[in-house]
Image (cartoon, rainbow, N blue to C red; front, top):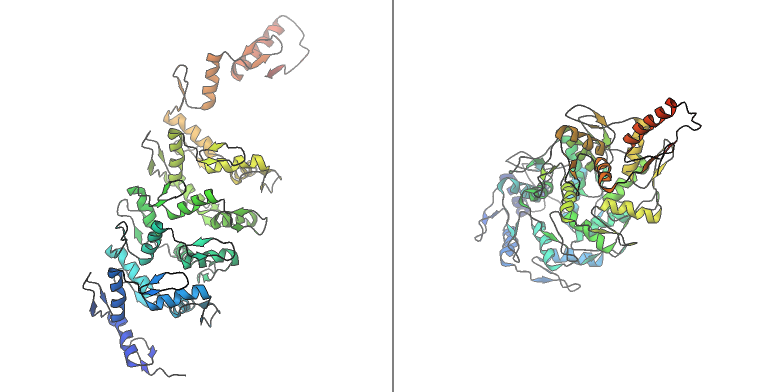
Length: 524
């Protein structure tokens, strides 16, 4: 075996020749003598400068004979060709995982060692990889060096540019041999394949929880540290991930860069776009091993599995209540904060959640985008469609362990369980009264706000509650559904019905008549 005689005095790392040692030493000194004349960016190695210059020239001289894809660098072509051959020559001696590129192995090994040699001089945060440090530094500088030649949009990361470019080309060269689904990037294919294999290679050293994706691990680790390094300059809200910040910023800009080629609908978030596409394809690749139910999205499967395990990993620090979904926790927390960022431009009503605003806006537009394939009925909300579909299937997958009653929806089960627990989680901030259901709280709050959203089309009178409107409308229709069996008199509502009952009974008693029946009142 070749000896590594040249040792770095700074960190002790050894190299087989003086040239490699000198290259390495620049990572400690920060020296970057090679400057790009096009944009002024500096590099420690001349090869990195040459590689970088191809970003400006667009030169891609290396072509894959298998699929025709071209590359700026021969090394990238070699690595790409292994996606066709399946070759993975680099193996981790720690866990046996194999990689197509040596760099991927080196990066992977830091998961085991915990090594983070690259520190940000701006905030002190450390990174396992130099590339991650460079990407992170752009959050401080705002630099976006990667520009789309098609539309001029700029990106902080090359991966962001490559992902964006495929919104123009629609290219998806990587196909899953398990289910046939195609992907624009090999990394996306690898992540997807873990849905079939169940592999979770990223483990939290703090609590031992494992994740299928490195991003999932990074996001999870910040639940231990509480770190939120990415702040919105518009409203000051902070986030654990830069992707979450970018997604949030679109609530201010209104930008919707992801467009469905099937129906033309645009989305602010790529996740919402991908989720929407499954409405057209009907694809449900994620299956619960416990009950066989299939889901369009892996996250939906994970959430569903908690109905079997009872796991509720998301806990409110304010009141200690736990939830099976992070979204339910975030929704719940707004009960404590009263936060309502999303306002309807049509009527001025504000909402705590963007999704609630979108659903509300359909009351103005009349839009019903969710259609039942069984009977053609359309709905404004996906949840309403899912509930409706169970009227065709008869499925009731959510069962109360207390009394055995089954429900078509998990929300209906949760509501029902409050009968057993007596829980009333929805509290009026005005008077302190608590309710078991959010709808009951909203209805109650109208006592304080004076809001009367239900208007009679006949005379224009408004009411706080739908039931009051229905009762009032009987004045116009003449409908009297409540009848006295003693005297045959009709009544419009139960209140008048009961009052009439007392009067009628009093008359009979006054006359000295003997009543042979009790409870002689009925509703038709």
